[in-house]
Length: 223
Image (cartoon, one colour):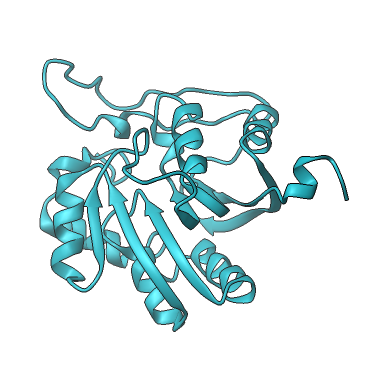
């Protein structure tokens, strides 16, 4: 079974370390460089919530950038969180679900959601919750770019519904562009960047979306 489809909760330490060296996922992945560049030009200090933080790639990228930032990584898989805490004891990593984040409304200026939404049965609930806790900049990276039609694709063996587990790895979805972008706007954000990032290999490219919360004037329809 490929790394992408492997049940996250059962990854060995060796496989977890692969997340830190895989060129498409590590701190130097092309989409991460674009994000760091954008944040460096638009923010003096970051309050950065990393939803679906995995083993801490984005924390490394921020640290290497030398920007001033407050960071919190959230992941549903306990093993991911434990590994990240062990490797980066100075950072904050907590276990949590993107559908029910334990933060107040608009409590994080930057909310970053990378390669999470495509692994869920659908995106509306997760996107709504990420937007709820975001006060300014919502960053979404999609493993499967938006397309003309939606495809909810269940891959691998069906999850064992008799056991509590993280079964998100059984989805590898493609979402329809118009309703997805409409959802971002309806949640109070304007898309300021929508870029296809060439990564090669099996996935070929990612879609990186950066959206900023409407200003009061924009929300009233003023320019």
